[in-house]
Amino acid sequence: MEVVVHETGEELAGYAADRIRAEATSGVLRVLGVATGSSPSPVYTALAAGNASPLAGLEVFALDEYVGLPPGDPRSYHAVIDREITKPLGLDPARVHVPDGAAADLVAAARAYEVAIAEAGGVDLQILGIGTDGHIGFNEPSSSLRSRTRVKTLTASTRADNARFFDRPEQVPTHCLTQGLGTILDARRVLLVAQGRHKATAVAASIEGPLTAMCPGSVLQLHPDATIVLDREAASELRLLDYYRYVAEHKHAVTPTR
Ligand code: GLP
Image 1 (cartoon, rainbow, N blue to C red):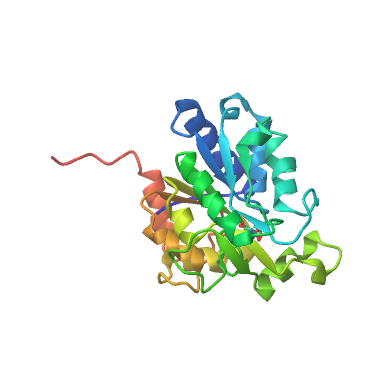
Image 2: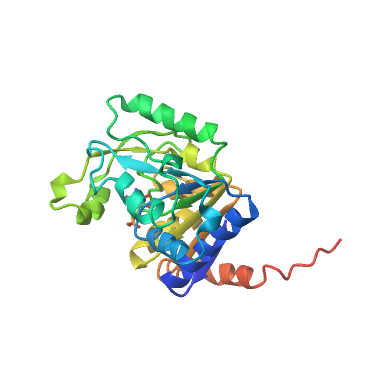
């Protein structure tokens, strides 16, 4: 994993936005995976503040959606993605895909989502946030490390974390449709962003802890091209922080010996 640490959330968002724009401009990014959440959100704001034209033709796939919110509910991830990504970046709504959490047949909806990703040619770059319990997408602790898109039951801690978006805690849905950890691992490149002290334990466990279903973010240790972009606070529990900084500073200084 490549670990990149920035002083502030603003620098972090600018770095991630520049990377997305550069990939889209060069043509290696055609299918973008997007995440909702407080860390990815400023990345989309930074993207929208610059030249969004390289992004116009992107196919976009969201990670997850609540089950049971009616279509058009402003608290649905579909609505969040519309507000934060589709409209500000001027994307074609027909090319922006979100799992259908309102489907009568959720198993069929999950299967159809996997098929849609495959038919688009797979995700080139997957943006990820991380939950305080280490979840990526909505893959809660104990998720199968090779899982595919499916219905998951949200943990009490995730429902409590997300209660701020609802009038009352009991309104937070109990279930979701989420890409699986195996689905996420299939993305060609992964870019996880995390900001804030409250993410430091999950970040450290994902990067340096054992590979375990108890910390779903740790599955990224199996990914051959994962970049983790952090602010100083989210990086504060990393044991090898000095090493990651050294690697970043000397990235282009390596001279092959033969
Ligand atoms: C949410 C989303 C995740 C997101 C995470 C962290 O519930 N399903 O995709 O990465 O939890 O969100 P936040 O950064 O707002 O804490």
